[in-house]
Length: 426
Image (cartoon, rainbow, N blue to C red; front, side, top):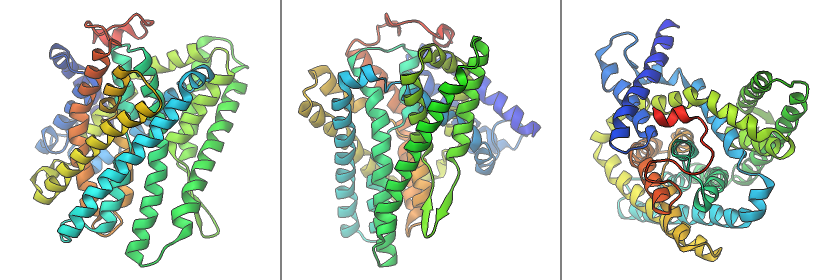
């Protein structure tokens, strides 16, 4: 227990200290947190075996999964705040069009490239592995995007559309993965299961949205019993923790495997709450300030759990490079095509795709599930390699795109309200 506490303290302190260096290099703070995690991980300082100095094994990092899951829940809850009725009326149709179309285009393109690789070199990658990697490619990292937007106080048409698209993108990605995983499983077993391909994915979405709606309504109802800011903040934090815990429950209804998507549940909770609570905006701002240390831990731990062994596996590097090229092209040109279809301005059309490149926790979760398929180890390693690349360069590319369209001024601040000012100073 004391080793875990010392490790968490070192994560926070190390991440913040390294962010001072990256600030001088004009890099986003999230990049510093990820690099800090790599340095504290079992392949760098952790390899020294000194108790409390970093993480000595990947199992030790995995023991802190509850921290990353909790942080992801708060991040999803915050993103749900973007789905205010005013926002949805202004750009909801465009966001849905772009969110769905670019995700599908990315999946199709990555599938086409990797399936072609399978038929050319069957021993390199299996067909089930190629199919699920296409679906995993659709997922974008909401955490990295949100952290960049927060750090630089970005605001404007592209930023607002980006936040909506990221949320929709992950929901679509979960559906694509569930269907692709069902098909890949069927190919492995030699028979198609309608239950796995259609019923279970749809049921997960319905259950997640229903649970999120209930929790959002309950949070608003309970908030009314308290009037002080500190107590309302406490009850908000408590409800998000409760929602994260409930979303981890798995159960069966006959032969049907039932469960929830943590991201969808918490996003729906935030969406319902922000639209029915009059003081939700103020409460969300206070929750954001409270969760800053938790978010830093999320990225440091995410960096520590990246397995650097993938860098010495030739097949992983070959498939990984093809995956990154195909996914990047899918995100960029998919976003461009869907922006043109929804008649977005040229600055948004040219830059939205670049801001959708970061990939992390959601993709890793999918990869862990896909690891049960034949050739699944390659799937996991390819995603690990891609996440390593995307998380180190993705936040910087997002920042540059937002800077290019004028939604971050050269000093890293905008005319939007300056909340959590100490974050930027760090």
